[in-house]
Length: 193
Image (cartoon, rainbow, N blue to C red):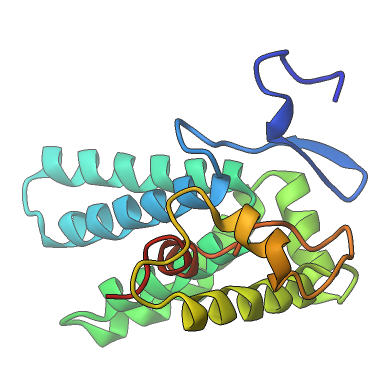
């Protein structure tokens, strides 16, 4: 895409008619970055809720906000779902009444997210995208690969080559050559033992 810096042409995605630069950090895939950002979010939220000192609470609140901002830039709906589930679990620990804060937090997060990400969520929820169907096809390919290579997997960095060798269930352009799931991809690459 012409609007991107020359060092990052692979980071362009179009969420509807709107160009969007996905954050990858030093990872090869935005989904990996999203997974690690989710972990940072949950740990920082738990530390924020457990801290008594004002300075610590402000620091952890800043880290929570930074993790949410980073996740917005990944445009990963799965990451957003993990924020919701992780946030609910952390909030409910010891004080279930905190769960009453979730609707207000969800509304604030939705309003604060970038427009292209909001568009993606509404498109998926409205059935205007093939993202969910494409992922189900990819998950099925990944499970078949794990079933056929359970001990050692197909080798690190070999998911695309393995899918091309006969595990590709669809040739639709919306179905990528990756498992689109961090845990399934690790299982395909290195086996489950």
